[in-house]
Image 1 (spheres, rainbow, N blue to C red):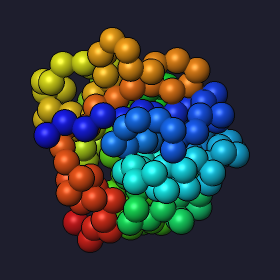
Image 2: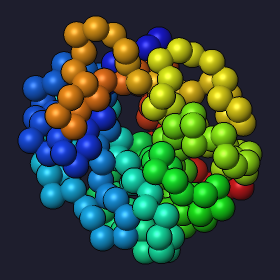
Image 3: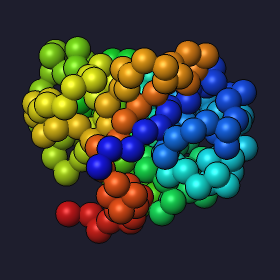
Length: 191
C-alpha cells in the first residue's frame, strides 16, 4: 500500500494540516540547537484532529550534537508513541555526527528516529553504521529502489502533477500502511 502526505518546513507555518487532503503530515519541529517551530503544537493538533498519521523532523546544522539532539527530544516528548521522529541530514552533517545525534535522541525519547537524506549526501561518506536498524526517507527520489547502504526507502518525494509542492509544503509518499507507520512510532528496546 502507498499513502500520500506532505512535509511542512518552517516556511510553511501557515499551512493548516487539517485542510490538506492526505494520509500523513510531517512537520519540521526543530533545526540546529536553538530553532523550534512556533507553529508545531498547532499543526500537530490539526493533523491529529483530522486523523492524519504524523511525523516530526529535526534539521541538522552539524553544530553541537548534544544540544541539537536534546532540543529535538524536548520538543518531541509530547508526541512520543504518536509520531515518527526523523533526522534530516540533507544539509551536510557527517555520518559520525548523525549517529551520535540518533543515539542521544533515542536514549532521550525511546523511539528510534528515521533518517531523511539526499542521495547526493550519501556519495561523500560511509553511512553504513547510520543505516543499521534505521529506515530512510529519500528526498531526491521519486522511484522505488535501493539507496545503498539502505534497502528501499519507506518515504519518497511525490512527483505527481497537481500535488502541492510550494510555500514550505512538499508532497511525499509513504510505502506502507497505517500499521507500519504506527510501528515506527513505538518505543523500542535498545539493541
